[in-house]
Image 1 (tube, rainbow, N blue to C red):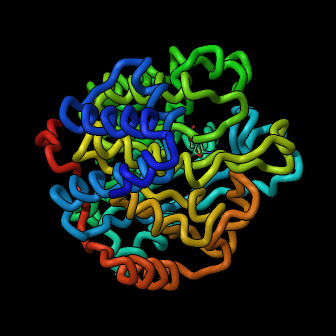
Image 2 (tube, rainbow, N blue to C red):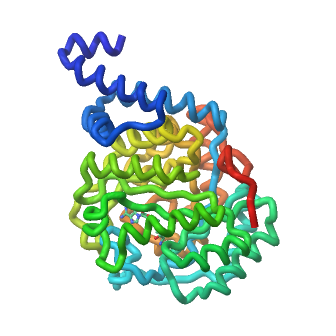
Length: 368
Ligand code: SAH
């Protein structure tokens, strides 16, 4: 019916090609570079609806109507890096810097556990003030107190030995977005000391060590083309991560990209749908950045195939200071409000928050 309507408008060829590519992706779990580009450039609202229906079918086959919640603890906004897009880059002199103590972090976990969180995500800038030993102690303390919970780390690029030590201390998962899989695009988003090669190396180490590994990219970052996105999708196909975080680029007023346009809801949703079809059991968050550029962004993300949300568990007093981009949502709410609000939002669209670690469905047994 939809197809016939499009035919009447005389744009049937594009539409049919796009639909055929979506079918091919579902059947074969991969596309060539040229096909990815054609699919991204040829997308239309009708093609997106077709894609999202399929994405929801796979999402529900693996996860039912349960949405996994990860409690995000933003424990430091000090950072030695200077990524051009990021609000907590070291050159942002107007950022008010903070660090949480181990006790404050454990307090966040305590609150979160009571609410139903069974995964804690420790995220921060690359802050050398926390020694390897101190980080391992924090991970170990959380794990001892909450043995039924998963610990996810998101601390940027570190050495193999450091990742291994943290894994042995009890960390289960690691999030490290590759940001863009095109080397020259990577250079245009980062200072010269940061390279795509090293970022990828870290991801392969994390997988090798046994972490459930998450990567991902920003949608609509400055200079991004459909060809870059094709590279991102092909890199994900090759790495086969257990998680992928994608969200729109949102400009921050104190960065070199302050005046750049942000990514769109529409393209972010389309890519979420593609990811669900390509890697059907993938853990896929409907991100806070998506919720920031559209008040219904996270709901739309779930309906496009996402199955994870990451509400903030950081103390309210520091939330505004972890400002990666402008107008970040939920910075004034208590953790309990965040859980309740998201649960209501999920119920309205026929889903619910799960009290569960929410592991990757085919996760290998944890080897020590
Ligand atoms: N230091 C850690 C955590 C970074 S913050 C690391 O390097 O992995 C987590 C993610 O926020 C980043 O990976 C990036 O993709 C995203 N981010 C940063 N600035 C952003 C912006 N302006 N708009 C949207 N997302 C942004």
